[in-house]
Image (tube, rainbow, N blue to C red; front, side, top):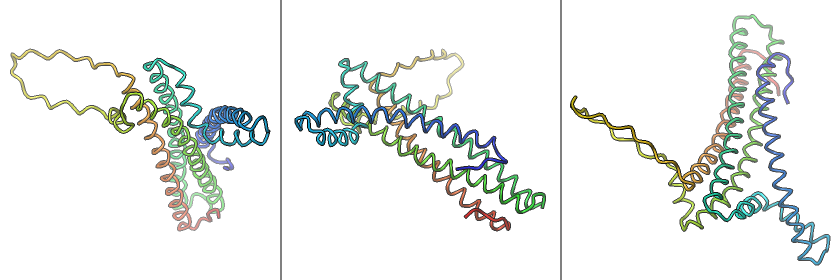
Amino acid sequence: MTRVNYYPQCYQSVAILRQQDQQFQQAMAVNTLSGAAGGAALGAIASGGDWRGALIGAAAGALVAATATYASARAQETDDERRRLLIANDMSHDYGEVQRAVVAARQADNCYGYAYNQLAANIRRGAVPKPEAAQRFAEIDQGEHEVAAILAEYGKKTQATVQQYQAAFNQEAQRMNTTPNQLLAEAAPPPPPPTPTRRRASAPAPQPSTAAPQNTRQQLAQGYSKLNQQVSEINQEQSTIERTATDRRHNMASLGVEVPS
């Protein structure tokens, strides 16, 4: 989407973001194809081997693959502690992937923002001809819109991933005889310690306490909560970049620079 001539250093982060989005899409495609294959097999059985029934089953399988496939696969692990740990680790991995995407988007946005501020200053000083300024700004504008577009798609894919975990998370809550909301409450950080009062000089110093390791319930709840927060952060980042790009277009127009239509 971006014709790179003046700011290749800014587009490096855009390229990284696009690569991460493609890798994320490939991982989701594997899950979807697995679900579609399972659905096709069930459809063929139910229809006595009719290919039309298999296709209907494949379509249905693809629709539910994002939820049923993952939850069913993890349900094969009968050890409760290990199963919850595996789900928590999967969520932690995806959280890291999404976080890297947000970082790449912010790096690109910061780079284009610095380039824009320099360009605006040079226009005001008359150091850059208007035709060249228009070309430079077009690249900045294209880069920002490409980042926003990738984030929009990334947000949709990540939301689908969260739906995978939602089914598994709800199942785990049911197995633990609790509700998903009650389980999520365990993800809240502990209250801050009370402010220490002034002690006498002769009072012995307290021994440092060692925090108890998290159990799998807490890891599961915190992983699910953090991943949901990351999805919200992607959407907020996209909206912020789009608003900023619109403001810059208006500012460039006020400086007499032709902005792309």
